[in-house]
Length: 86
Image 1 (cartoon, rainbow, N blue to C red):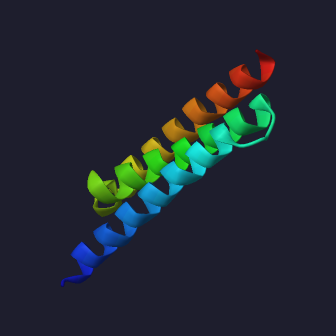
Image 2: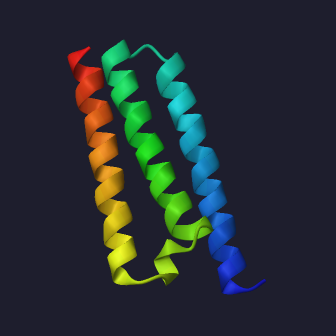
């Protein structure tokens, strides 16, 4: 198995684990605001992994990597702030 396939396999495993963590947080006994913030944070991490590994932005130029990082932080921050204010 090549290193690229191994890295994609581990990334997929992390994505599935993060999905299960989000499900546990949403269905657990935490308050809705804490669970919502945790689910949004895990979703942001998952989006970052998908962009970096599966869309191969990590192999692109440094400018694209920074653009998507800033975009992800901006959108995720806006969602967490509006969720907290609601």
